[in-house]
Image 1 (cartoon, rainbow, N blue to C red):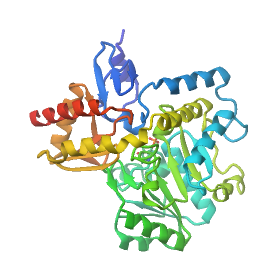
Image 2 (image 1 turned 60 degrees about the vertical axis):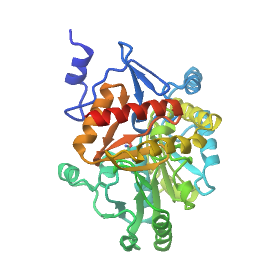
Image 3 (image 1 turned 90 degrees about the horizontal axis):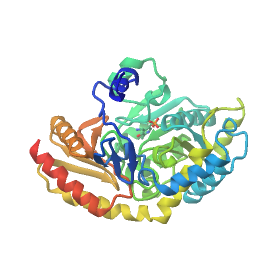
Image 4 (image 1 turned 180 degrees about the vertical axis):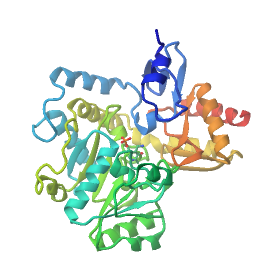
Length: 395
Ligand code: PMP
């Protein structure tokens, strides 16, 4: 009989030749546990998902209560489902007035697809401006926004009419013109290794989009739901995007995404053609119940208020470490830039062996990702930093 590990490697489709390959049986708070009871401190939150910690009891109870009422009953948008309505009420309450129409989908990539379609349909334009080194997802439309030559080569032809510009390069904004349907940006580029758009750039970008009639899309799939110290990063900057994307932590551990805009813009998906975006499971009631509960947890436990102190601890601990050339961060989305990819990868591998889960970034192999659940305590951070530092010096 094949072992679980053998079935995983032979029959569960792989995304790389060297997956982390840990067997995890249960998870709670900031920890994952192997069947033998080995404990791993999760410093990446399943890639910025578990903001309220793993298996949060409040979220689980909300899921159980929803399960007793109903699971899927209808394709997205046809029936009034209280779990969806309650979540929407909570989301629009934490967002500015103009972001008042929420379209629920299943994933980050689907939120990107929906937003690109919405921008094309609303403006009647076809050109899309995206940023170099961004990551917006793995589906064809989202992948079309990549600057990774390897991905383009492997999967071309992708969407036409994509123009890539550089982050924080104001001169590059001249590429936004009257043909541009939208500009899509991660205000904090996650997979580039936590690279932030500065305030001056964001202000100029907002101004240019408004002048040219292009919609501004903020992909906050990784930076959202409190991770940067506000519900969404744009709330630090004072500007408001036309379309906001969220997923990952939105569902409190369940799969859920959304693209959020104004009623006026969103209305264009209802006609010519009717059903401009269709999704069967988008806004699944169990996921929405979990998402509502996760928002309650973030509010009740004052997790957003705790982000700065926790982020500062990581920053101050590693700022003077000679092996770390730079600490880039936005709240609890942190990159420890190392001198080489080799050192970063060795450190990550050794950390995992020693029970601390960290990894590097898709487009920056020489930086170490730290994005713990927002529920992590200062004590846990201190222990993790001490162990990581010791490991770094050893490898
Ligand atoms: N946008 C950003 C900024 C992301 O970080 C990701 C996932 N890493 C996505 C989009 C795609 O999300 P998903 O994997 O849920 O499709």
